[in-house]
Image (tube, rainbow, N blue to C red; front, side, top):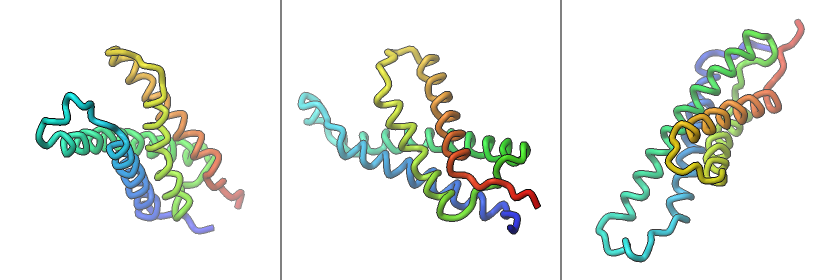
Length: 142
């Protein structure tokens, strides 16, 4: 089995993570209703889309960094190779919406930013590690 190149590893990681995050942002912005008492404000719909895309871009960047750290750690431990190809793209595409959906379904933490941040980091790491271990390719013994 040939060793994956840095470009073959980064391409699906970057494209999949951001495409999945932005697809989730578009779906969330489409489904999220503006309260009737705010409907008269101009450009509120555009502002809603911008906020969703900014939030999910931040989440995608965090997921990308977590995936990169997990991939390098699993490679160093000789458990998994660097993921490449369509499988890597699909896993990266699914990860950010999965974490975003989990955070939306999580019980309200109020304005406790610290608890929300720790929950988000735990979800990012847990989802990233689980997806990489389950769907990653094992290193050949040869």
